[in-house]
Image (tube, rainbow, N blue to C red; front, side):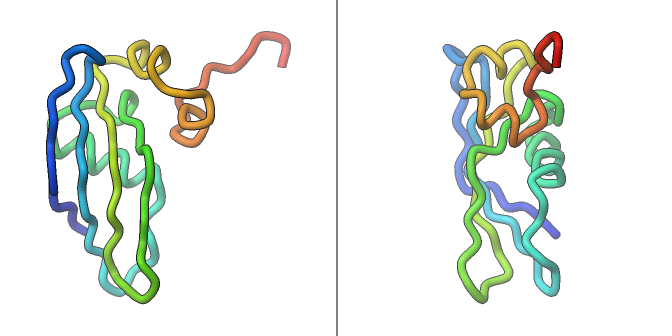
Length: 99
């Protein structure tokens, strides 16, 4: 499985780098969000813990997946900017007290 960067944008206001990518995975199933987070973070030298995968799209019958990731400067910046459902999907949600 290898990742090709389609577009990369610096967003200093949001303290993140935005990455559009395509993953080629011939003979394999669609990659899991967790492994894609690690690949995206490695592409720009960021940390997996502060990376949010916004979406992944795999066309039927193709061995490639297109996606969009946001790599933040810190987990705190990600938690401040991202909606709760994306934080949960990317294992960045903070557990509530009393749960």
